[in-house]
Length: 321
Image (cartoon, rainbow, N blue to C red; front, side, top):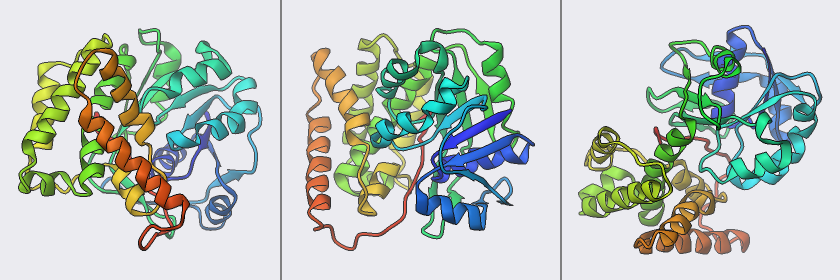
């Protein structure tokens, strides 16, 4: 299988690197500085499931001839990504996006048509270090994809089969839209809370914020249900435990991006939930407060007034996120 990976953050490096390890033809398309380093130093991944150190094929522009595009950019870079991958998609490739949120699907449909776009999500906590090394932070390493119209197609099965177990737990599923809403429920909870309080889940719980976290989770579940994608009780029980753990060091990549002086995906994740919650008549005041926090961060970032900005990026997708 011939894969074009758009984005060489942690997610792109890990999944692209694993597909290359399995013998697939993988090429990376990324910004000039990242492309130069990747071409010179190759793919470097530190993982509990085996490190990767191998050469990388790097392109300066997309071309026809690919079977699939793994779209692994940040949501705020979507417009540039659409333009960048267009030659590959117009040449026959299908897009497998693993962006946070769900708003990108309509944009991809508008650009390429529904037949060329699958749904996808990843459950992985990872970061890219300033030297370009991708590091997996725990044992999460799932990649889920599927047809947005429902059902499991042969092409979805073939794409999922490109990623070798146990290093990646890849699966083609019949209900990818529901899975994406599950991810948004959890990610919206962790991202809003860790960004708003600038702390990990455990720190928030130890500070007395357990009820706030659980309230966000329940509100997000109600939003998903109002949109036609209710989450199950087993899912809620699992993530009540996740957001109620006083020992947890878990924080969303949105917090790491903010602390690195980078833009955030708040509008794409928290904003989507806030707008849907308002349509449903739900109280989304905490969502709006988190969005205001992110907007104020962006004002300071643009003005160059952030304390100790750090270069580098993190790319973590979430938890059944």
